[in-house]
Amino acid sequence: MSTLCIPYINISATDCATSLHSQLQLCGAAVAVSCNNWSEQFSYAPSVKARLAFSDSHIFVAFDVEEEHIAAVELADNGRVWEDSCVEFFVANPVGAGYFNFELNCIGTLLAAYRTSRESATHFSAEQLSRVVRHTSLEHKTIDIRQGGKWWAVLAVPFELLGVEVAPVSLRANLYKCGDNLARPHYLSWAPIELDKPNFHCPDYFGELILDRNE
Image (cartoon, rainbow, N blue to C red; front, side):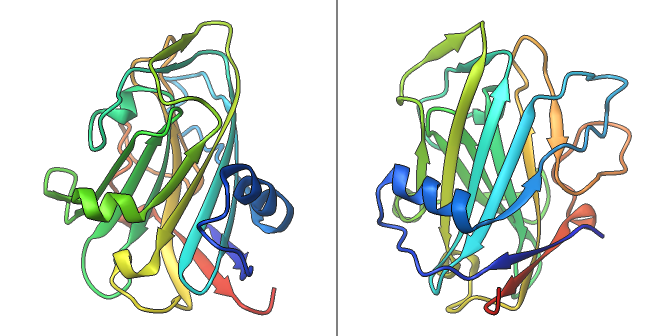
């Protein structure tokens, strides 16, 4: 099982976007989202780095992406963000069955849900979505950059939305990068997935995040 020890940092989810991104770049645990599990079908693999940390109230994930085609058309939360340039954080329910998926396109549109399977989902309400801090380096408008480039995104998920009041000792999770409708679709993960076809909804292949206050 893939394992990552992530540090405690004393930052606030209400900090500005660039400050959060900079602090995570400086203090977060670094990992590559580089497992190209279906390379025979989808050979293209953009460069994706993530940094993770946690505070008393939130878990933070910052993604830095460089890809040859950057595109987004989904402007409405809980829409089809996975078809755009998209990064994702899936985390198992720390107090019961199921898992949560947080999917963020490059312009800041968010899909979030609690699931017991790929097909069975309870999407977050507008109030719940408002409590998930999300920032991206690109404006929230339709884009199609065929020459590619770099972009970044930050997610800050309150532990309360995962059903716990304080940070747990560990979490089972995976990180992803996809883009179903890009010029070259791709499906990358942090922890490897041993399935025949692209599928991120597979908690059996989640890795472990160790939340370490001594880092």
